[in-house]
Length: 214
Image: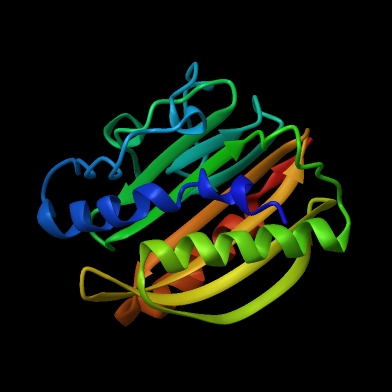
């Protein structure tokens, strides 16, 4: 159920972004475009609001035409134009990379096919979770789910899925937060090299603490 809604999330650009962190530690990374011909949901859309600098430094990331936002700490830069994924009104992807910590954050907003009805039921979230795991399994090596739980952030229900997997032989940890809002599936994915798990947990908590929904 709802598996196709997750096929067009940010999982397609994660590997390229992570390799960019490895290959260009001292310059602006240029992630490798995702393989294959882009589908309708992967074509790019009118850009969202320009990213705003957070009061204490870093980047303010806006989603859903600024109805949702969170802050990334200083060190991250917006690499959305380098993903090779074009945005459309049906699908918007953003990519942020910290080349020093080799961490990346990917957001996506996707309108699912009209045949797939979304609501805030447990069944909808369970279907999205299964679809996400299926997409990740096709993209990565040796993927394992380490935890899954529901949480409420600023009054909005989210599902959190934690995984560990390999990207071109490199082990990474990932946390994926997804929710259903305004008939869209909104996904936030945080990826960190496995040997920097403390940095990973700190970044995830920073996003959770600063996430706002209006």
